[in-house]
Image (cartoon, rainbow, N blue to C red; front, top):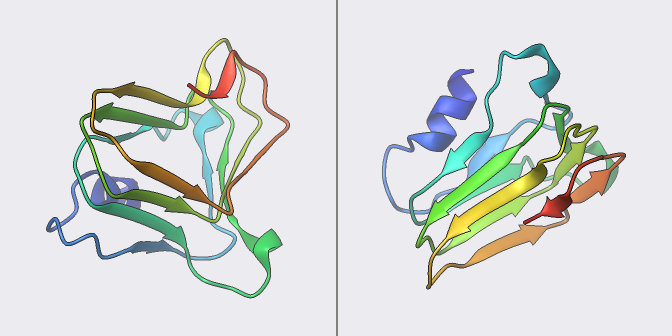
Amino acid sequence: DSLLFMIENPPDDTGDPIFICNNTTFDFTSGLYKPLRINRNNVSIECFPDSNVSSSCMFLGGSQHIILEGSIVNIKISGITFTELDGDNSSVYGILSSPSSIIFEECFWIGNQGNAMVE
């Protein structure tokens, strides 16, 4: 809960990475977490570096994982596995305007259902 708040409300615009510990799972099926909203520049969310890519962090279940909004640049999401999405939505949904720049690095979409994984 507090980690998602920090991601949505970082202390500054420096783009310093916000690290999530390896093997952390955000379970969206419980209703405890809402989709992560990113609507500012210079946001970097990274699963803490590890030599084993399979030990990534996980966004699990729910009807949406991330919502990207506005004209945002320098966004990086790294090492996250998005899994078990249900419903008719998208795992990552963008309501974007130009210019926008988002990088997904070593992210995986596994066992999802929905309209699209990234829309």
